[in-house]
Amino acid sequence: MLQTYINHLSQSTREFVVFTQAKIGVMTVILYHKNELYLIMQFYSLEKDISVFCVTASSFPEGVLAAHQKLHSYVSFNENRNYFGISAPDKTGTIVYKSAAEEMEPSELSKHNLEPFVIKKGSYSYIDIRDFEKNIPAIKKAFDELITNPDIDPQGCCVEWYLKSNLVRCMIRLKDIN
Image: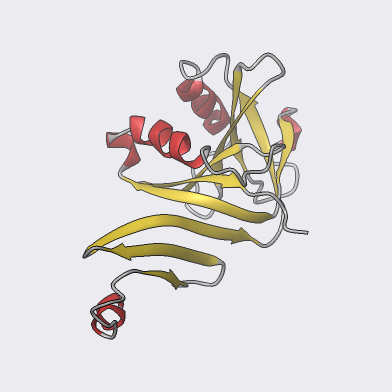
């Protein structure tokens, strides 16, 4: 499809931006400049709030794995369940990390007195990382890139959404457009 756009450009106009929508709620912005393609940004529209229950890591990043292990001790893995990592700085600037999961049955997680949290609906900028377990530093690199966006929600957080066993979507919520 992209080659079709390139072929229809005049010789004097060899730059453009393409907005693609592969799925409902997902948009990708690509820049074509001087015969090079650049992925500019990807956006995801979260249509409704997601209520989750969390285990807070004892420290970041050292305590992240233990927090995920503790969460999984309460519920067994289920490919139909949504799992998340949520992080944000506290008032002192220290990163607080939470391993989180969505309930599939009422009170299956809340009965363990886990902290409730709501991932707010809205527009998110995101970067997908495939085979993330082989490249954990790629998660930090993705968020380092995402937080440079001047339009991020100042009350938002960094969200890791574990979509498949080998895919994590690193997302940051954008400010609401008034």
